[in-house]
Length: 322
Image (cartoon, rainbow, N blue to C red):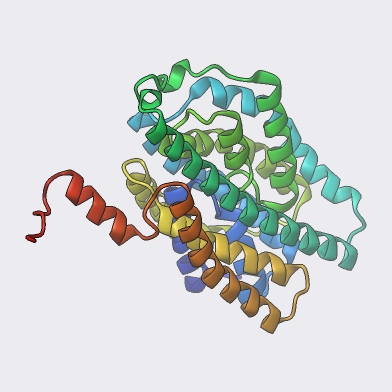
């Protein structure tokens, strides 16, 4: 491969935007794209994507550091578990038999992690919905929300999350955001969404650095493939992080959930018609099911209804004449 490929660079731009916006989806999107659309072997895709992430993650992390949306003590305890675990994950790959057996193991592991990541994102959204309901029922909760850096760190549980995320990233290039960000939300419900994204992006830098060293030594790293990803991903993640540090990326996250589910099903061996059926059912069922859940928890079913309610509260909509 030449030093860069325009198609892979375009895919890197798309993935970079998603990573910057949501703090997740880098390996979860890039690795299946390389395998499905560009015919890259799974091991080469994982190795090159991990090394590319090492250069991509700091861009988004720096933006959030400047915005003050990073819990630095939490980052430290996560890294205590994730850095050695990420390198260990690469070594575990090398203990598996080389050749076709290794590729099959990687494809299955990727598929399983992607399906889990999509389900975890749904769980994360539902937890946020319940949090907003509690805030409405008890208005004092918003007033006593602690400052980011004063939120106490649950050390053993945080280190365990780091170990889990590090192993998954080292073996599949997926998990730094897709799974760990949900675990962090369960452990630290007081952290706001943009603070969670910023903290996850910064902790992913040393994690991915450790995995990158492992893949450079023991993986199937390709300079041309990595360079192609970075040409698009670096500007993409910068733009996405600039947006996410100021506003949520809910639409992107919903689309990403469906993409991860469909990609995981395909990697697990589902036929294309089945994958399309799963994706269609997720879109239709997701819209209807999410609208029903929002109503159950006291929110308008759709965004336009929520905006209309907000305008009424602000007095911008005049009362109708009887």
